[in-house]
Length: 149
Image (cartoon, rainbow, N blue to C red; front, side):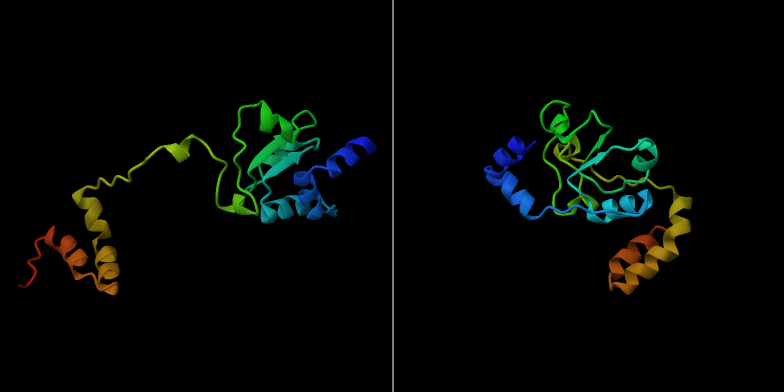
């Protein structure tokens, strides 16, 4: 281990990482889960006897490794997951790079007359609050309203 530490100390990437390293302790597994979700790590290794319990509660992590035989290098080099992951806590709002980043989606709305009827007062109120009278009139017109010229 000492040889490995000495070699790592010469690597600039490892040096930079170790400058910000810390060893944390907690009183419970729940505390660990809470911290992890707030910290939103790029990589998270879960090595506990009931990993499903922990995994079900993890909401923010770039890539999660379960068990003693799934260390981070597996994801980096062999398991097929992408190594482009959110860092600096961005796993709270972003996923690791995946196929969805290369796909384009369109939002589609299809609504019946009765569906619009049930929403019209809400839409009209919000449109008028924003000062968008034409939006409000677009709804009213569909129910027989004739805007003044």
